[in-house]
Length: 268
View 1 (cartoon, rainbow, N blue to C red):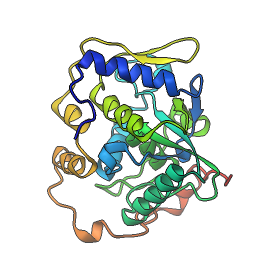
View 2: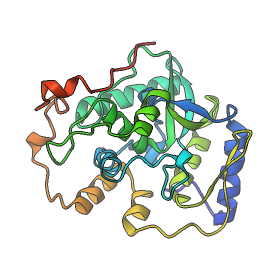
View 3: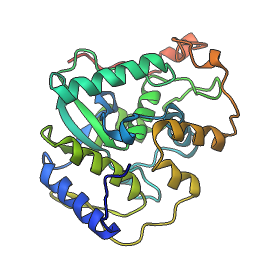
View 4: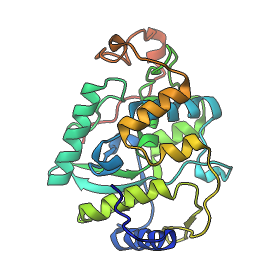
């Protein structure tokens, strides 16, 4: 269930702003997608939807990478991350859960956190971060033989340098993480305010109108979201054989293509 209780919309936004300010680790930090995994509390503890990760990547491939620096319409949200030690209880739990998810569902980007001492756990924009990782490896589409190939300088720069993100401290309690994760989905469409000091808030007031698909995609858990995306994409059914190939992203890869793929990041 929701962690909002009886709070009004305005009160929820005020509390979200307060929690971001309270637990912020400082100004915006550029974080590479290969250093990110879902926080265990995101999507009501169900993790990410592989269908939605591929849907976001498909939109980037079709419509271009809409970075915030360009100032255009419908730019990507600012990732909200918790900086975690790989040795902490919550850090180990998040890493283990993401590693298991990537192994169980090979259409996710491959697990890239082995050997890292520090990771960033996503409370917001988790699907966006993993969609970027599909481009990082020139991954194979969930619905066709097409691949996610970097065709824009600004997308390549985002992969190489990272995305400016809100980074929260590791001592942030689980209940506060859950509230922020849920609220970031509910407040999708509100205007983000980024100050010169790097502090970020979400403006109170009416959110812009989103399509029914976008609105639903923000409030469903991972399993429900996967069904929604398949309906939206017109995919009636995925054969079991399509979902168990452990070499999903390598299958059918042309040798000439490998030279253009971004290298896997060095181990920390």
